[in-house]
Length: 109
Image (cartoon, rainbow, N blue to C red):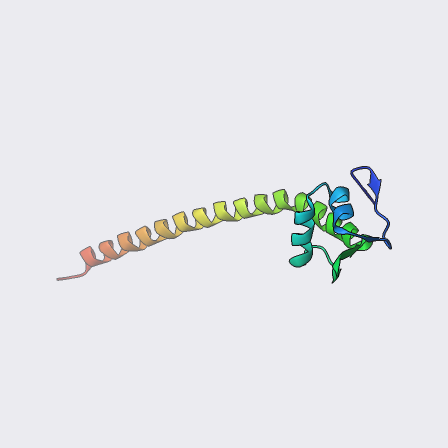
């Protein structure tokens, strides 16, 4: 796998600056990713990141970017269905109210 034209060596250990250069982000961003577990790393004096972790991170990011529009579309569709269900529920309630009013008119007093 290569990022920004540079190959990532799966078994190589990278430091924060090297990882930042490979991913095209700041060193501080890499540190945050390491701290919050987005990138698996070990802190031995400074953060040590194995190439496989960078490859996994990039693969997951790519997958997330590909799936996000698909999921958003499905969520939009579900929201549309939810609105339609609410409309139908209201119409059904109105029909029952109308039927009740007709029944009340027909009952002997």
